[in-house]
Length: 280
Image (cartoon, rainbow, N blue to C red; front, top):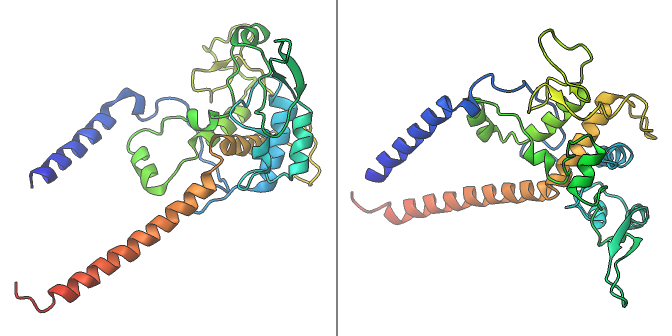
């Protein structure tokens, strides 16, 4: 009984804290619309064609500033990912140059990347990245879809736990890429070198110029070549990069739930059989 009382008190304290904490206050931060994704929900899976299109957008638009240092070229051909063939992944890797060494003379050298290599950073260090981007540091894309998410506020995050809503990061990336607005509201100050984007979590002004425009990246599968579609595709690709084992995790979770249900049923009927003729 004392354990139950302590548990109830702990839950009540958590609810009160969540309701009063500024970080989760209703209306704080930009409003991020919830999008429809193929990988959403307990049975969601990645759309392979979308991942390949998203990689194309990343490669042709984003890779000049944003790294992908936690993703290896071999991951592009692994199960659960974009499903490139091994030969296609080798061709993609060969287009990049990585620093290796030291050689027999003790010197570092450059060579074409292989499947075992990870995507190289577009800049040698953070200082060089800031110098090339007006002082702003372009974040690495490897885990960005899991690291960036707008607070949903109380009580929505409680509902999210039950509905298994885990796509806040992808929703935010999509909203950010489509949220640029040339019409700056009166009273909002945007400094030189910054751009108005009301979906930016850190404020209305962002140092990244609108990165993409209609018809910028050529799709060969008939998919619309619009900012909206580009944003969806690259957001999905970034979600895969941040959680490449998502499908495997969901499949394992489903098997565990089935096992627990069967196990609980066996325990129940075993208990009924053993205690059936015992007087209470």
